[in-house]
Length: 108
Image (tube, rainbow, N blue to C red):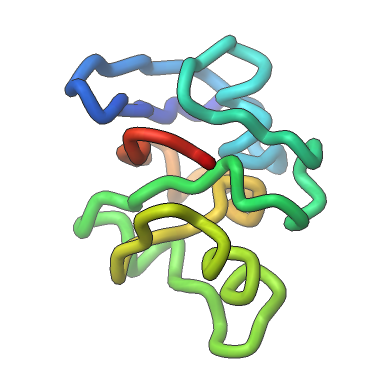
């Protein structure tokens, strides 16, 4: 099992465990983390699982490729930043154990 810490826009942290191979979004949904709506269920079709990846993790998670479906869907997110990702598109690996992501104030 790997650990992920989700930090709400208020600063409240939620550390959860998830099996390697599952998505960061699924970790939030399975553990009732507030702030990840995941309306499309992880199909990269809604941008309601938007997160900001902490800088020290960007080299491991990467950023969306220009022109990708994820990059296109992020254009629908309310407030994106250079470290924005859709959590449904980040698959947990052993290297991501301890990942920290922040959530925007709202997903719509």
